[in-house]
Length: 406
Image 1 (tube, one colour):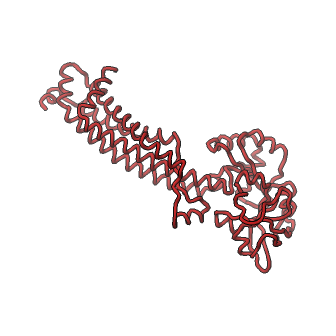
Image 2 (tube, rainbow, N blue to C red; image 1 turned 90 degrees about the vertical axis):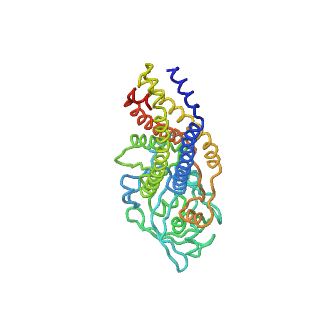
Image 3 (tube, one colour; image 1 turned 180 degrees about the vertical axis):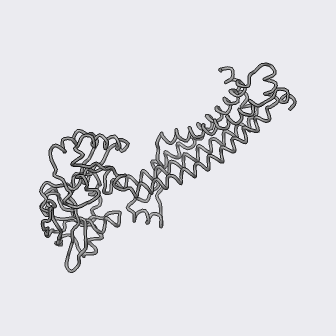
């Protein structure tokens, strides 16, 4: 084997120009595919990060059936047993919430809103809500004041210090009405959230809805998102499935998952077209090399070299070209991918406005993950292996006499 490896290495450089061109084709395919894929994966990661940190969290615990019927009567009682189970999981930030629909009113104007009771410190750990404050100050854990989203405040004509009237339906049909001074105004990137959010402290919301100790959800942030599936599955096995449901962000937002999957498929198709084009280029080169060396192969067989050894020798040549091309393409792409991972492209104009309207920061980052580096390398080497199989069929069908007459 070592002798064949040495011979195949020498054969590569008998025609330096052709070898370098083939290596360049492989390197270019790896380079362009890594850059394209890194921006695509980076955009998905950025989208998911914005979604989970804007409101939903990576996963939530609800009362069983709440996801299908999100009403206050499907809330659950916060208890020490559940808190103890959650405390056994490392790297989780949890934000308890009690939320329901209510009517908000000021002066002569009224609008429906989502009234949410929160623990301010816990909520900030999940959604960085402190950073959304544009006027006033944040409520405290036992405050009896409110915070209102900016578009809702603008519609109602509210400002800090005004008194907001809220009317709704409480837990198990109880009436709910109250007045709450406006302590702060928040601005959410998402227009949908910004025109309907009202925050109270969790005790104030529980009192308003006549739901002491009740929660509609517990939202979770994770230090290591890659552990999401493992944590959710373990939590589902630990808590009582007859009382609670544990849903990750994909199950809570299936429309977003479908959008990402659809876009991902289009990206894979584009890469597939690129690989097909590069594959035909490599195949043409390999077939040309094989046909040019028919006489050489015939002489090798005439002096006693088996067809298997000839195939193995040429296969080693192609594998070496593939490895050199993959390493070269990866070396060229890595600094570019890393640079845009650390310094995302900031979008401008209409594209930036569109992303901001959907609640996303207008940037286009590149993902820097080992997984898609190895994936592209495996695919390219797979293309090389296919060309080796085709050239091998030609060699195995060679007739020594006919080959010597070429």
